[in-house]
Length: 133
Image 1: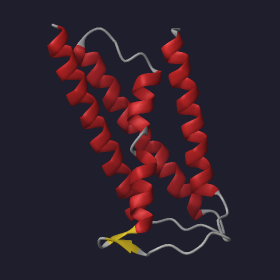
Image 2: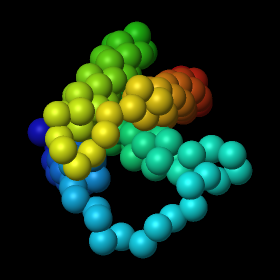
Image 3: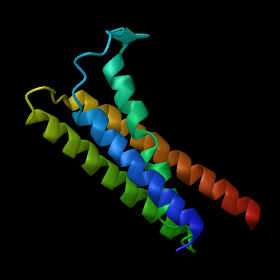
């Protein structure tokens, strides 16, 4: 395993720990924030921002130079599905806590972030791959 992959894996693990802390932490003493930002609920923006880095960090952690371009696209698709599973698991986990709530719109925000980030990876990958050819 290359040094780049080890750093990427460490960053991914730290990120996943931070997501778990954000999703399951007790935040009763935090100051109130605006309920909406440009008409979008703040909670949905937080979910979007929280899941946006997942495909990028995962792609970096798991050797992104898979050889054939279709392998990289397959990897991005698998990482997108894995991100969806993690997002669903956090919402299901929050449902079973007494201090958090589960909201399907949070899951939708997570999926939107995962999709945008995954498409961005593919676009960047192919633009770099085309330039190097």
